[in-house]
Image (cartoon, rainbow, N blue to C red; front, side, top):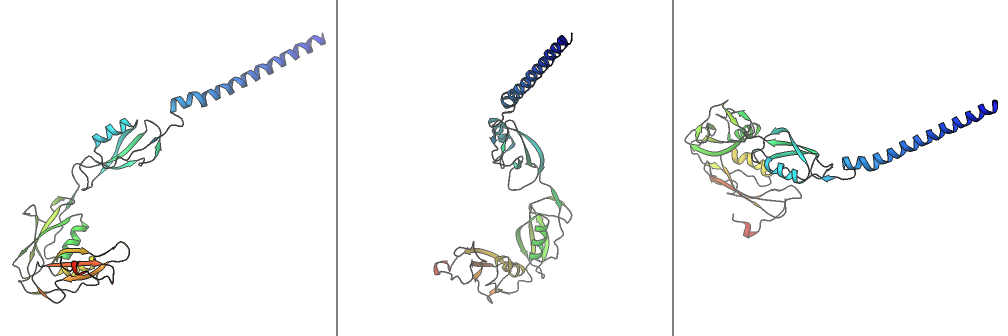
Amino acid sequence: MKLEFKKLTSNTLGGLLLHLLLSVGLIFLLGILYFYAYLPNTTNHGETITVPNIEGKSIKEVEEFLASHDLRYEVNDSSYSEKFPPLTVLKQYPHAGAKVKENRKIYVSLNRINPPTVSMPNLVDVSVIGAEAILKANELKRGRIELVSWPFPTVKEMKFHGRTIAPNTKIAKGSAIDLVIGDGGSKDIVAPSVVGFTFEDAKVPILGLLLSIGEVNIIGDTLDGNPVILKQKPAPGENMKVGDIVDLWIGKPGTEVPEKEDEP
């Protein structure tokens, strides 16, 4: 009786261990098949697509272009740049060159159809150089300068598309504002000395005296170093009128202006 019990127990344990080993082996085999056969086929495992550069393209071009690359897009937000046409991609994510899976969604920022507006600042009685600084701070540009007989060399009126524009009028960013400037009574102006100045520093006395900057001639390589004004025409001290032009030659300090460059 005891012998039969032992034999039965031994057979039961052996069978149980065999079933356990078979189950573990089956699970292991299924795991291998899942990770190395099923999963790669359903997720394109190991296959990537290089994200193309779509910045600067129209949204219509983007739709066709990404479809041909097995990618999708979604408009994430919008902003404005006067450098690009409306409905042009300004930014993208992921960036060009990134590696992504097939059918990945590319998020884009589009250029607005209409630019945002700002309030027209009041430039009346402000100098030309001051008016330029105010316009730039408000993301506007200076247009033409119109001289009129007026004893003060300051802004007398502001115009947009030929019409007077009042302060606080809503206007599109990037618009060019024409300035009506008094001629200061048409008095003679002594040409300022700007030799040795940087171009930005030279603009202050030139524009401040209601003179205009004419041709700007670059002498030599100006990428390395700090270029300055090497020569000006008219020369410092010469008599000029409001609105007259000052031509400039720019280069590295110590550079000589060749004779052939002497005349603009």
